[in-house]
Image 1 (cartoon, helix red, strand yellow):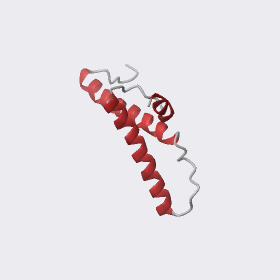
Image 2 (image 1 turned 90 degrees about the horizontal axis):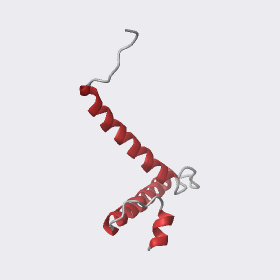
Image 3 (image 1 turned 135 degrees about the vertical axis):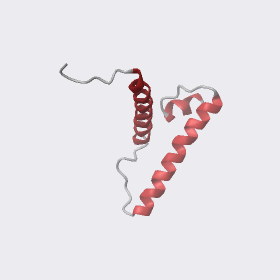
Image 4 (image 1 turned 60 degrees about the vertical axis):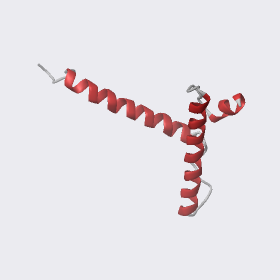
Length: 84
């Protein structure tokens, strides 16, 4: 045998959970970057933290509105605003 594989049933479930969390984080980060927060125009650390907080609140508000609206397929805030 040249290498050990982790294809045993004991390793598959934790891997799938970890992969699902990782892809969820990547999707959230992608949506967060689409708000324009990767290049902040403020110089103060507190101001940057406030802008990030507002961006997170707006992203969560869009997600909550999508859940309450009954459709989980909103890809962007722009598409969600069009449907409102």
